[in-house]
Length: 496
Ligand SMILES: O=C(O)CCC(=O)C(=O)O
Image (tube, rainbow, N blue to C red; front, side, top):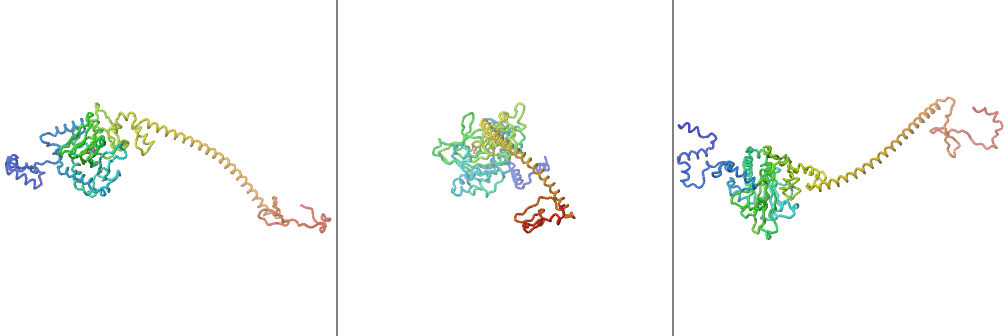
């Protein structure tokens, strides 16, 4: 190989001058990697350090990518929980995050109170027991929640000042790790590496930053009650106190804190889309006389759309166990139980249950009692349906009776209307006749007075010939002593 071919063999992508200088210096030592070791280095040079996603996915201290994927697969199938080391997040980022949470919870109560809220739409809030009003007993725990569901960014000044920079850094690092885990888990399911990320599984994130104070009577309560996570995947950072337990083969197993590690567990949505290949396991945190214990869980969840077992996970031997459902259904079911819905939710979404009409029952329940938690007790729903049907039936009977009365009234009004119409016709023809008579009266040359009942005016010896006409003198009274009528027949002509 001559010099020109050697030059050409330097990859084109190596544009960065620093990197080129580092490579050349290394080359010039002509001592290789052994030379580096012999020189006594304690940190490996930058040129050997691979990108984050390759680090966790490929190098892994002598274990091949295939081995890692197989281990992930096994753990996700058997137990749904595993711990990761060499994940690429520097230990200082983990320590700072835990320290920041401690500072938040231990700061002046008045400052902390400004964040106290149960508003679901609030991005950053603090409260004791997220499910305080829904659970049967409260947990010995307070939580600062940072939700990146509605918007996938949080601005530094939205975070409490005491944990601002550590939290920003941790969110950033865990987001990247989450994407890497989804890629590896997709491969573990035999899917395309990008499949789950493209589905949006890593998009929505909720960080819950727990503070478990030392408890004077730990045997009487719990730090976190038994549940499964209603998300795709959870990445949990815990301090060294311990207390997290996972249920495996009906036994509570301690998840021993390992310095620098992160605990990962499969959530309900992952169990559903993997068609039960992966398990969403129940877990809890016991209360402790020693404390405080600090932990932070990042729930990876997804935007609302239809989910169901992934096409590739359904085969003839592996028919879908769950039907398609929307996040809204999940939310509905979840909200009817002590948060989170977990196993009940998965069972609710099971095809078998759907076949029995569970979903229909849930729809019926929402119709009967909108804005109330959905019941799953079918008998209770049927009871409600019967009650509402009876109410509707008696309302409909009342409506029928009112309707009949109204019809009757309409009939009477119609008859009255017809009578009025006839009367109107009679009046109209009367009017026309009178007008004609009137016309005839006005044109009569002989002073013909129309035949019409005279109108008498009391006390006046005059008669009104017709309404509207002036009174016409018809006769005058003369006492008989002054009037001689004996010759009237000669003096006055015969009446016409
Ligand atoms: O604090 C822990 O270790 C676990 C917390 C947890 O299970 C949860 O937030 O869902």
